[in-house]
Length: 114
Length: 114
Image (cartoon, rainbow over all chains, first blue to last red; front, side, top):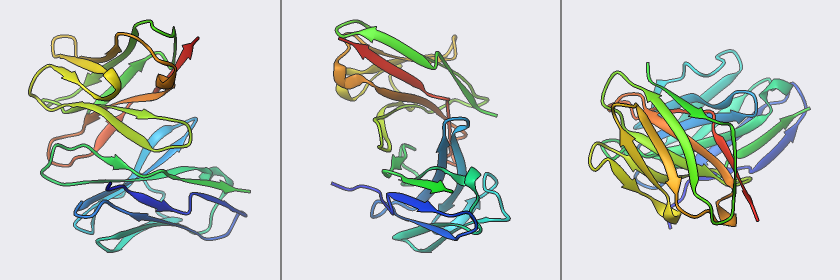
């Protein structure tokens, strides 16, 4: 069945390194969301795209985070340089605009920055 | 701005007992409301949604929720808890009907006692 996929599922890296997380939305979905989940802050919306164009990235630290959609089947979230406070689970979700607004979540990327 | 409050960060019930997870929302426009479930090390999965049709909404796994406009509530219930219901549950409200952004509550961890 159709699912959102995310790679890698787990990533351990050292402070200062670049991290790239990838997401493949459900085929045909034109809206992609990036979330971060931590115990302290819960689920936070970082950015989202519609038809590959960024609509809102106000939740994202601009100095180190960047999000792109090189094509309709791939969304990327990059952190450069990474810091220990970036340790979290990052989720991608996709949706179909004009539909009933539910979002379909991927399994997440668990990032640990040491 | 829309917001969601989930009363009780942790709820514990016995197997076979009624499950009641509380959610109150704030919205300046008629909302779309959602309940999601998250099992350990997984992404969020849609349980059910309210999109201005019937006020009593039935979802997967025997869950249902009732939209009460006068109380600005959307509580989640299940008549008889099963061990497999142990998970974290999130209530969410659409920020507005065009943007498809969701505002999530802080989550309620449900524990089932044998």
